[in-house]
Image (tube, rainbow, N blue to C red; front, side, top):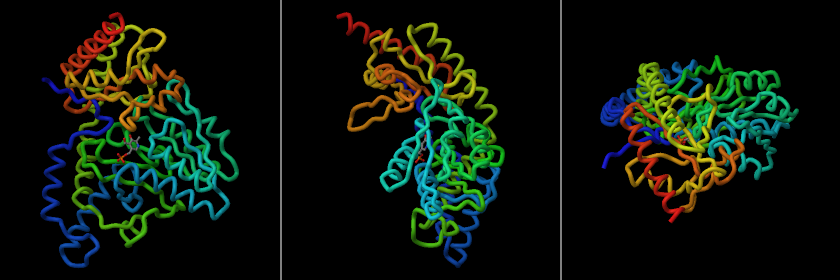
Length: 388
Ligand SMILES: Cc1ncc(COP(=O)(O)O)c(C=O)c1O
């Protein structure tokens, strides 16, 4: 059976070239980057070169970028680190949005349980955050605003620059979860005006288990992992140099290939949208038409016009070799309606009847056709089951 992977937003395969870089580092640079001897110094050189390359790619200085275990840790560090550092100065209010990744949402819940005040901002039907709402939500005790750069389910790109300007004018720290944008669209921390940014390697053909946090110089933030003095005392634990080297290589390749890939994704997205909307009835497009990541196509079957079971949709596609996501979280074996789609105003059944296709470097137009054909088969089978 043909297998088509259209879930590149969840994770990407490891690039061969990244693997080669890491293989060399695993064997040649095994030293502990904190050791004084030559093995340690060589590992340290590779670590710092990798840091410099990644920092440069987002317009940051090398001593403003710290390695983490991934995007989740970077988000945790941003929210907990700023909140606890600000609490001492009487600031204990955090603003997030309803469409954030669970790395932010659940961290904000945890902060609430630990005495912090959290405001969750709504979004419009395209998943856009209104900067004016951000302004209105600010209070004298606000210490942090966290808005993702682009949403991982529907691809909408948020007006971070405007939000960061508002935050700056109020002396509030601005964090943006950029896990889905770095490597896909240009990201420059100075241009965006953010104070903190979260990155992850496995969304851009790099290894799993490594990410980074950009922290602008001068930002008051506490560490969340205590131990040795690695990462300039910001993040304790022996650095994983081969993963850092792989991350840097992945960043470099993504930058080199971004223009070509973006053009390809636009073309494939057009082909897919055209087929979906001319061949299926009652489909709703999720995500902003213009301000969105080009490799994501997220559609829902409107519950007022269709009786489509979201779980059966994903399983049916999987049985035909097509790997996609419904955009809903899978917990204890059952699919939940996506908090993002609910926040966008979709009703529960429509939110559940959703498919997110996300293209990658190796995706071909034949893959797109195969996936749409498979969707027809699954939906037709459901219709038969309903009429039987
Ligand atoms: C927007 C966003 N933030 C954070 C994360 C978590 O990143 P990681 O898997 O590196 O912990 C993800 C991963 O799906 C994501 O899409």
